Length: 158
Image (cartoon, rainbow, N blue to C red):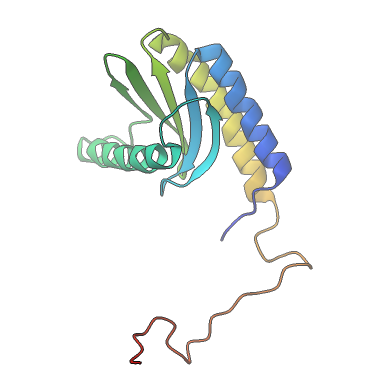
């Protein structure tokens, strides 16, 4: 069941990410779902955040499968360190991932340390969102139904 992300929820998510950026000295923080769809972004990177969230979700999904193969429930975090930039991926819940990008000037220990309380805050916000009304449960919304009587995607001969 889909949930609605209200403006107040977005503000709460952004506040946590901004605080995490300041404390951890990271360049970028983003929140995405397990499908790689970006939910929130903070930072001033020139990188494509949509591509990063999609690839990050893929990397994290692969690491979960590796964990399963090794007899672990999951790996809750993945770190890729480069010469100039590094990326830290951490599970918020079963459906959500926190992605942090930081340079060599940032301390990886700070990134890991401050991600813990941020993940707890994000987990609470996401739980609050899930407690809200599902999409379509408001009086103002109208159901959208596709008819199966016609082909929507067909080739026309003209």
